[in-house]
Length: 451
Image (cartoon, rainbow, N blue to C red):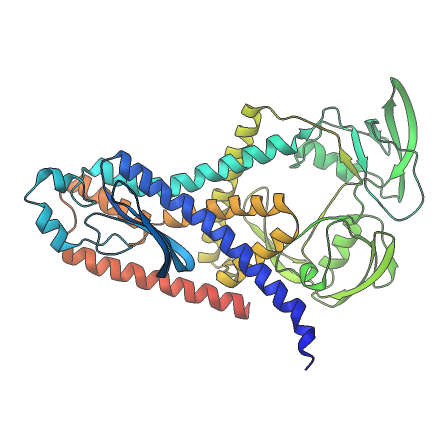
């Protein structure tokens, strides 16, 4: 074996691990800071704020007596409040017994504070994850801008073939004789109908408004087989496809529309396809086998299709205009809500057997996705961190003992009955919760290896 051939793979592994650690550390820090700061505001003393588990690499104690530390295993974190026996907020009977004689000291413990303070402290972790996601999505929408209305050509994407008369700054009135509706980057019935009505021809007639004059010019098919992004852990990613690639032939048959590519992939039944790609003036050859993919549908539910893992791009990049803060915030909230509802829908469909449980990713899959997103640019990586933050916040709200959601269920029980669950029951439930979490982690890791 040539050991030097392993160097690029080793470098890629380090890059992937670094991206994973950075993404996870940011999310964990935000989550745990939510617990810490709301606990502090609520009068509960935090003894330890830890990023990571295991041997402590760095630590300092602030003037409030909180020990801030970074540990060697960067796969999580915790805040240990006064009265906690461990990172999962189990009760330290010795500390609680000592504090019970002093009402002021008892009030500063996690288990002696009022119910509202404990509930707020626990709920703050997921809430901060959601708030972080909303803030990131809002910032991205503001920086990226929104497509101007009416739809105007901001840039013509590099494509193989001859030059076209279409120019930057042209305002699109009709394409192939089909009137251009209000542009919506996320789809919509009007735009979907417009796309479906386009004549499937390599070159189309564009009716445009240029310098105040209406004219007809020729331009490329609006949805060529141009790759705007590559899905992590997909056949296309494994084969080496990149954003900006243009697929020009499948099994030797020329194509010029993304729908032609889609049809060939869906009809492949998983058979290996020979794909010709145009990349920055070069013609490249790839072989890849489509994979079964569970896709959410606009009307609800999921459909399983053969996919290679690429997202189409338009032949033009629409001109952008600045998004207002309110508009961007609405978009950020909607994006976070869509991730939550999509995740819950996916979980339900896995439970009912409608889609494969292979959709659950473990640490290896998340690490690979982190590296892939980082390799596609800072904006893609930041967007992924926000998506993952929403997922972590949602996961922590599941009613499993040892997770935040489990503690909140205990608090609901306490509010309803006037007393907390007894210590023995809590110990059994916490042990059950830890076992369930470890089982899920092992299952997800198995998915990473075998799916």
